Every structure is written in C-alpha cells, then in structure tokens.
Image (cartoon, rainbow, N blue to C red; front, side, top):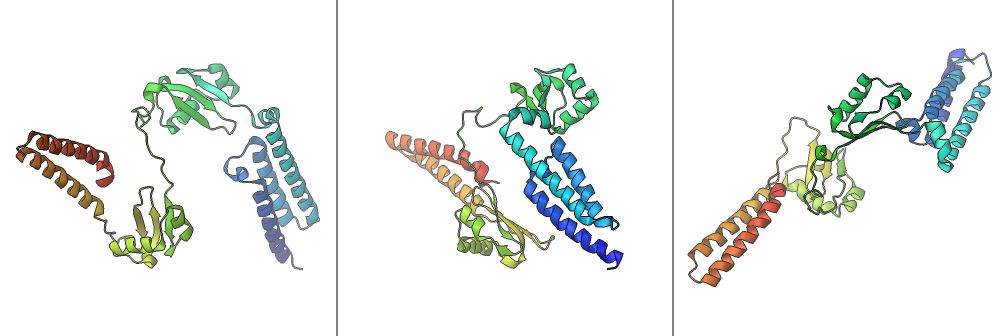
Length: 286
C-alpha cells in the first residue's frame, strides 16, 4: 500500500477512535477541563498524531497507549466521584481572593496571580471596584466567581416582595423551515395554533429560518430573507387600547351618576381596572 494512502486510512481510523473515546469521557472533557483532563486531552491528541503519521512503527502500539490513557481517565473520574480528598488533590481547592472588599494577598501569591490579572477577571464580571465585592473566589477550573455586597446587587422582584410566576424556557418551534412538534408540545401549543399565528403575520413556514415561542406564548421569527420586514401582531396594542377605553368609560359613568352608591361603585371599578392595566402594561406595550 502506498505511504500516502496508509496515512489517510490511519488518520481516519484515529479520528473515529479519538471521537468515540472523547464522547465516552463526557462533556467536561471539552467544556471545562480540569488539570488532569487538560493533560489527557493533549496526550490523546499527540498519540492520535503518532498513529496517523509514524508509518515506520507499529500503529497498534499507539492505539494501546490511547486506550490505556482512556482507562486511566475513567479511573481518575471515578475516584473523584467517590472521594472529596481526591477531588481536592486532583482538581485543586477553590481559593478566596477577596473577602469583605479586601484583597487577600497571601491567597493571591498562592495562586501566582497579579493585581492586574485579578482586576481583569473582575472586569470580565462587570465589576470595576474591589470595595463592591463581598466575595471573589477562584474555582478549581481557574474561573473567578464574584458576589457583590448587598447594596450593589441588582434589585429583584424578591426584594420588592413581589411573587413572580415561574417562566418557561423559550422553545424553537420552527427550524430551517420545518415545524418542531416536540417543542410545541412542551409549550402546550398545537401545529394548528402555529400555522394560525403565521397566517396572522402573513408568513409561510418554508420561508422561516428560526421561529421561537417565549413563556408568554408570543411567536417571533427570523426569515431566510434578511432584508424582509416581519409584520408585528397587533393583538396586544388593541387589547391595551380596549382596556384603557373601558377604564375611561367607567370613570365617565362615575362622574355622570347621580346616585352616591352607583357613583362610588363606578369609581371603585375604574380604580381596580386601572390597577390591572398598570400591571399588564409591560406585557401589552412591548
């Protein structure tokens, strides 16, 4: 067999084996490498290159080395799952870099981290002032996580004592011009509902690159034609205008009523409806 053809076959075989073994090692091998996983990834890549290119040696020796490294990786991961001490030794412990707005210099030295590097990582978390930080912790992956002081944390509905209903995840119900039945089921919608919504917006299913339904049941689409303008549905503005008209009518009836009890009833209804409108306004005007 010609050398160039042997290299092609070896490379294809090494790629398939390396892909399967990487899938077996799990997503962390790709998305968030630990110290040992980083070494394993480099070694497996080097061994795969050896299998592909070193035609003077026996290729099966490289495959044996790849399998041995894979088995060792499995063993290390199993040990980490079973032992906290093993996790701390292999992946390192998390280190507190800032506490109560004060930089811990000894921990900075331990992690071989300069002040410039710390400030750069803080800016990556949208933090520009060390005094605003309650805690800053460097995780075993090298990433820094920051907890701001209470007065610098964003205001949430919980701080205001407002209970908010759980929000569903936005689902892609149309992809590459094709309807996604499973995503529609998760949102409690039917294909007929989706086609009716598209008809309201004067759109065709095959013209849509991506269509999503949010937690409020609103459909937004992205068309293949980038310059095309998607007509916006008018149901919400119409509903908001109708509610405002009803509130104005109740207020007018209250002003024109002669009976005190009737007048009071209209005023109460108008006030209650105004409260409902105020709550729904963010949803109906966006």
